Amino acid sequence: MKNTKTDNGEDKSNSPKVYEWILLGIFSGVISGAISYFAFREFGSRGLIAWIFCWIIFMRNLRDYSRYLAVLITITLTLRGGDILNIQKSLPDVPPPPIIYDAALINLDGGIAYNTPSSADNIIAALRKALAQSTTSGLILHLNSSGGSQVQSSEIYNEITRLRIKYPAVPVYAVIGDVCTSECYHIAAAVDYIYANSASLIGSIGVTKNVSDTRNRINKSKPEQQSVNNKHAQQVQQNIQQQLIEDVLRGRGKRLRNPDKIFSGLSWAGEQAVELGLVDGLGSTSYIADEVIGARNIVNYSFTENQPVKIKSDK
Image (tube, rainbow, N blue to C red; front, side, top):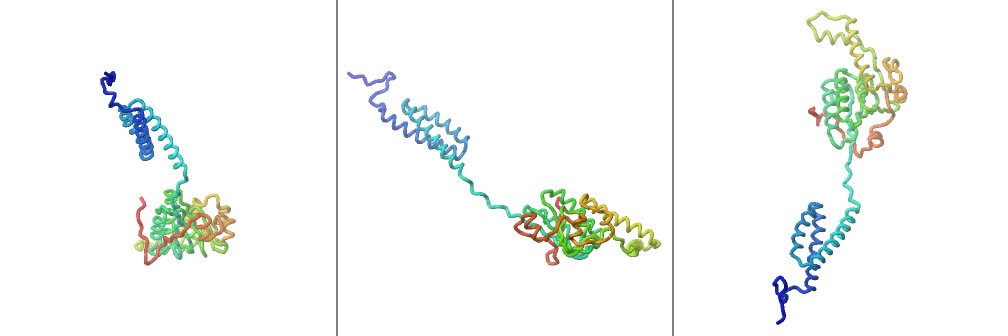
């Protein structure tokens, strides 16, 4: 009788034929190759490694011929899938929508005094709000004032200096309108760059004010004491004025070409101010926003009576 048993005792009549092994190998290779590709595409190298462990266990259950064929097809499809993935990665990405940066604008107009639109409280609040915006790429302080309180101008000067340190990537510009003298220029000296119109009036730094005004301020502050004389009032006034001069020197530095002339109390037109180093160049608000800052929009953060800006700590 014909022996239908294998050496292992299995019935040869029930053993798969060669073509069945081939079909099984092709089917297994296609499935495993496809899974390898998608595992790598969706989950990266970790997904591919996880699948390899599962694939090894699966391949152990196949016949020799089926196993070799499945391995060959799996490798071919995986490599081919990698080529497709690389092609997809090489395609240009759609760029994200550009961030639109703004130029922040703050107007300082009229007398610089307490409880006015140009007070230190209002200007400082506007400065903090403008610089805290992530879209602010530059700040323009439009100045049009003949001066006022040196206490108010000193507070604004100090705050601009502090904010420039806190936001070093955001330049601060001053653009002078019709006039910027005395305490107004005190504020301007704190910014990075000053621009003006050729006909702007700039200066009056170090001008000697009326001594009687200073004396009256001192007497009003201490009515119970004996009235001070003009000499003492003049000394106080000179000390206050020297503080302004030192701030201007600190802010403008070596850009000032003739300090003795500049601090004489005289004023100059914009073109003359450029020559003296009081101003860095000639230009308007729109010119600075468009050509210097390169902003798409100008956002006004100025104080208004209807929408006052509240001071908030930026710490």
